Structure formats: C-alpha cells, structure tokens
Image 1 (cartoon, rainbow, N blue to C red):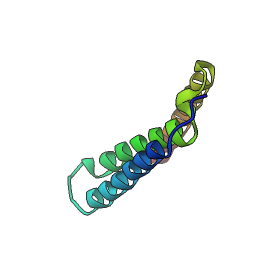
Image 2: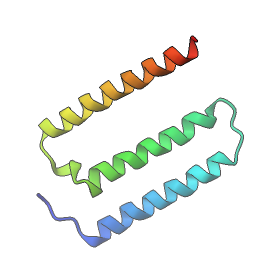
Image 3: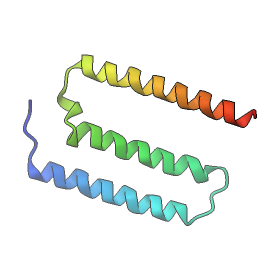
Length: 89
C-alpha cells in the first residue's frame, strides 16, 4: 500500500471544501430541472474522492472495487424501485 503524503490529504480536503461551497452556491440558484441533478453530481464526485483517498480504495485490489460497484448498483436499483413504487401510488 502506498503511503499518501499530508499534502495529498490536504489537497483532497480542500477539494471537498470547494465542492461543498459549490453545492451551497448551486442550491441558491434556480437552474430549473437541474436543481436536483447538479447537487447529486457534486455529491457523487465528493463520494468518489472520499472513497478513493480517505478510505484508500484507490490502492485496493480489483476484487474489492468490483464488490463495491455491485453493491452500489444493487442499492441504486432498490432505491429506484422504491421511488417508482411511491410515484405510482
């Protein structure tokens, strides 16, 4: 496993802070149908940064990455079906 320097952690943390500020700014702007999509995309980018660097997933084996991907896909399907069920009631 590669040891990351403090500089890398600080740069990633500053990126997370910048994306958080960007999310707050996006929440104050009316961009029509993108009001939900833009913050979700920003949250996805922040999630990838946290998983990759702070949880060290970037340096794990492909097996663990594939298991995480399958889990995220299954969770997305379950949440999607929940929203479909709620929307047709």
